[in-house]
Image (cartoon, rainbow, N blue to C red):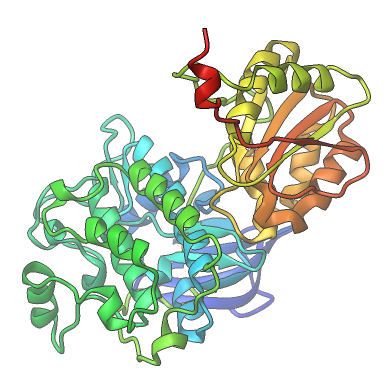
Amino acid sequence: MPFSPGAKFGRYEILSPIGAGGMGQVYLARDPQLRRAVALKVLGSHIVASPEHRDRLRHEAQAASALNHPNILTVYEIGEVAGHPFIATEFVEGVTLRKRMSAGGLDTGEVIDIFSQVARALAAAESAGVVHCDIKPDNIMLRNDGYVKVLDFGLAFVRDPLSIEEMSRPGVVRGTVQYMSPEQLRLEHLDSRTDIWSVGVVLYEALAGRPPFEGTTIGELIAAILGHDPAPIAAVTGGRVPAPFERVLTRMLARNRDERYLRVAELLEDLKHVSFELQGSRRVPVGAAANSHEVKTDDVTLSASDPSLERELRPRDTRPRGGNLPTDLTPFVGRESEERALIALLGRADVRLVTLTGPGGTGKTRLALHVARALAPSFPDGAWIADLSNISDPRLVPSAIAQALSINEAGGASVTDLLVEHMRGRSMLVVLDNFEQVTDAAPVVGRVLAEAGTIRFVVTSRTRLRLAGENEFPVPPLSIPDESESRRD
């Protein structure tokens, strides 16, 4: 039975219905004990006696709780009230990607931001042995602050026989046909490459304003997925979509999964390259706004606003783990004088923000990392890097830094507040790489400097941040020795 606003469900107070699906109803509710809004997913009375649906709800909570990532929805509780099984999760204020695509106005920069965050979530799942198996626009939620959450791990395949049974297994097909990989339709064993395919279908749809595979019946749609290559994105969009996307989509939608990206991390790395290649053309309109094509879907399992469920029950990790700087595998030559000068500058007690400026390709990142490695032993809480090259929306900077520092989000608190709380009282060196496209986020850096007095930042950017106390460190191009000089004895 549906619950009306004001009704009590265990300790929760129902505020309003926010979605419905084949398994039941989703409500916005309030947890009076912790004073926070939650999303309650409650099994419908028509299926409450079904062992399969009860197992799926439990599996959904367990699979999400096995993960710990800011792009995956947080599960607070699983339980049962008056015979009604439920899951309580964080409530996400925003819209699904389905609704965002339908509204139009997407551009290439926003597409890169969204799908890079989706890839980060799935890379975390992959590392934990979890395959989502049901990626589609309805299961990707866009928060009002620009952050992305991946929803609904109810069909996930989990490689952990000690804790969670494999719900998606050979011989069983679940999900939405439009986004299924060929191996799903053939009832084959699945790995993370099936998620890569599904993300490719969604990416194609976001760019073209139409799905890559279509059919008037389920049989025709399955035949298209199994036997037809999608039309090139350039042909569908009249060349509007930049060419690097074609390269990525070709690998994601390879029918032979051995020809796809082998791991989600490889896809994420390629998206970073695409972002770099699109410098100067990140505002190209794509999707429905560009093509005015009505997108149809056979998705009948979830409402477009159904904020299903995921992520961890455990609290956020509050201690750094020594840093995340990559290993330098090649000799560092040609910048010895800049290295000495930068180390000396950062050794001054009054210097807490140094911005390495200069044109692209001058080696700012490598110099910053080399110096950070050299200084890391001086910082008890580690030396860290947050790569911002894949971000164009300044609102995402706090979350990108939090993710780099292994700070998990907590319900109700802003990411910037969590960042300041985490860094206050700690001695850390943080490299913020490629800040030039998110300079409007400079006040976040200023606030951390003001409230966390032992933090030091090294920023690489083509322009200054224009903050009080900033020390600009120009990095000129490396000079090429004169040939006549090099031939002298």
